[in-house]
Image (tube, rainbow, N blue to C red):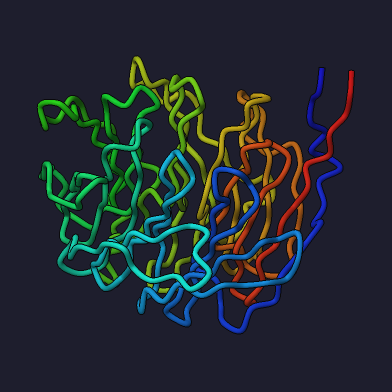
Length: 331
C-alpha cells in the first residue's frame, strides 16, 4: 500500500516566466500545468519539458477549470468573460465566450458530468451555464459582496459559493434555491479605520467523497489596507454544516491562505503568501497547527493537487511556477 511522507516534500521542477503568476491548475491527466499571469494571458506548460503555449484571454485570470474529458479548458477573467478553449490546441483560439459578469469573474467550475459550468464574480452573483452552447441556465442571487469562489459538490446536485465576508451558500442546482448558509466569522474582518471588509474564501475544496468542505483565507487581521493577518483554513462537515476545525500556522505566519486541497491520504494542504513569505503547509485532520511546512523562495498565490496525489503546483509572485513532489513510501 502506498502512502505519502510529506516531511520529504521538495520542489522538483520550476519554470521561470516573465510575469508574476496569479493562478495555476493541473489538467486532468497531469501532463500539463495551466497558469494565469499578470501579462493578461493563460499559459499551458508541458512540465516534462520547458515548452509554453499562449492562451490570450486578454485579462488577469484567476479562474481555470477543465471539462472531465480533459479536452476543454475554461478561463474566467477580470474582464468578466468566460472563455472555452481546446486544451491541446497548437495555436489556441477561443471556441466560445460569454460575458459572464459585470466586473471581475472570479472563479469557474465544471460539473462532474460535464454538462454545466458555474461562475462567480464581483457583481455578487453566481451563474450556471450550459457547457454545450454557453447559454445561461440559472442565476443565483443571495450574496451581498464579491463572490470569490464557486464549486460543485461531487454528487453534481449541489453548488457552494464563498464570498468576501466569509459566507458560504449551498445552492440546490435543480431548484436554484438556497439550501443553507454557513459563515466562517474568523475569515473576515471589518476594519473601521479603512472602512473596508477584508477576508473571504480565497480557496475552496471538497474531499473526493464530498463529506468535507475546506476553505482558505486570512484571519487575525490587524490592518486591512496592508493585508496584515495570518493564513487559516476552516473545514466543515458537509452533511451537518458543522465547523470541525480551524487550521492555522504554528509561527503565526503573515499572509493569506490562497489555496487548499484535501489529500486522499487524509491530510490538508494549504499555502501562505504575504508579508511572511511563501509556504506550503500540511495539517492532520485534527491538528490546529501544521505538522510540516516547506518554505518557498517567494510568496505563493495559488495551488493545485495533481490527480496522482504526488505533485502540487504553486504559482508565485516572483514569476515562477513550482511543482513540489510529495515523497511516496511503501508500507
